[in-house]
Image (cartoon, rainbow, N blue to C red; front, top):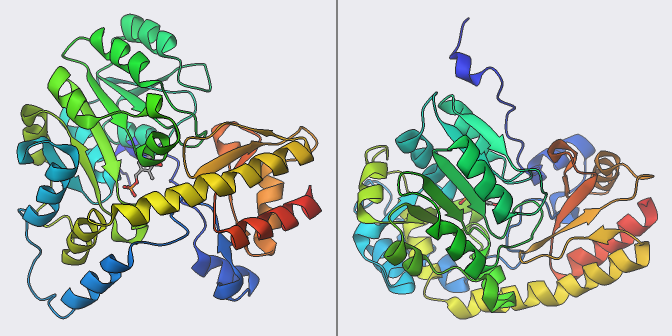
Amino acid sequence: MKFNKKLENIKIYEAGKPIELVVREFGIEAKDIVKLASNENPYGCSPKVQKAVIDIVSNMALYPDDSMIKLKSALQKRFDVEGENLIIGSGSDQVIEFIMHAKADCNSKILINSVTFAMYEIYAKHVGAEVIRTDSQEHNLEEFYELYKSEKPDIIFLCTPNNPTGDAIDANEMMAFLEKIDENTLVVVDGAYMEYAAFKEESKKITPRVLVEKFSNVIYLGTFSKAYGLGGMRTGYGISTAPIIKELYKLRPPFNITTLSLEAASIALEDEEFVQNSIASCFSEMKRYEAFATKQKIDIIESYTNFVTLCLNDNKDSAQLANDLLRYGMIVRDLSGYGLNAIRVTVGTPKQNSRFFELTEKLL
Ligand SMILES: *Cc1c(COP(=O)(O)O)cnc(C)c1O
C-alpha cells in the first residue's frame, strides 16, 4: 500500500525501554528492574496528587472539562499569565505537534541544535519541512543566528536545558538572541527541565511571562512529565501570546487531556515543596555520578537536568554497554542514535544509583 510520502524517512521514535518489555525479554521480575532511561522523577509525584486522583476515579463516565479551568487557573497563578496565554497538551509533545502544523509546511525550514530532542525532527517531517542543524553539540547562539540569517527558518527550537546533553543556555544570552529575530519567525523555548536548571543556577532560569511580555513570536513549553513526576499522566503546556495560542487551538482535538490528568497536574502545582525536595535530592545524587565518572576516567557533561550524559572512551561502545546493563535489569539510554558514544542516565534514588555504579563498574 502507498502511504503519505512525507513519512518515508521517519525513524520511529524509540522511547526508553519499558519495564514491561524487560520483564518479558529477560525474565527479570519488575521489582528488580531499575529504569533510568526517560528522565522521570524517581520519587514519583506528590502524595496529595495520588489522593486527589483516587477521589475522582469513581467519576469517569463524563468527558473531561474541556475548558480545563482548574489546571489553567493553577498555571496562570504559577506563571503570572492570563488564560489566553495558555494551551495544554497531551504532553508538551502534543504542543510541539500543534506548533509544527500551525506554522510549517513542505516549504518550511526548521532550525534545531545538532544534538537535541528527537521529536522536533519527527514532527517537522510530518509536515514535510526541512530540518537544519547547527554544528556545535551545545547550543551556540551565534551559530544559530548565522543559520537564521542564511537559511531563514520558519521555526527555531531552543531546548534549554537540552535533552540529551543536559547543558543550558544563559538567560541573558537568550534574551539578546531573541531581540534579533524577526517577528515572523517562531521561536520555541522548550523548558521541559527548567525546574532543575532554575534550582541549580539562577542565570539559566527562563521566565515564560517575560518572554510573553517582550516578544510576539516566542512560545515556551513546559511539562508535568519530569520534575512533577507525572510522566504517566501525559500533560504539558505552552505559554505564548494570545494570537499564537489562538492559532494552536485550531489544531487541538477536543478533550485532549483526561479527567485524571487534569486533576493530577492541578494538584501537583499545589505541592511545590515535594518538587523542590526531589530536585534537591537529584542534584545531591548527581555529585555521586560526577565522582563515579572521575574515578572511571570518563567524561560527564555538566548537567542542569535530572539526567547525566556519560561520554564513553573509544574502547567502550555505548550501545553495547546499554545492552549489557539491560541484562541486569538496568535500563539506560544509549545515545549512539544521536551520533554520540555516550549513555544518558536519569539520576535515580540513592539505591538505584548505587546499583548503576556497581553494575557499570563491572561492565566497563
Ligand atoms: C520529555 C521532554 C518533552 C516532552 O515531554 P512530554 O511528556 O510530552 O510532556 C519535551 N521536550 C523535551 C526536551 C523533553 O525531554
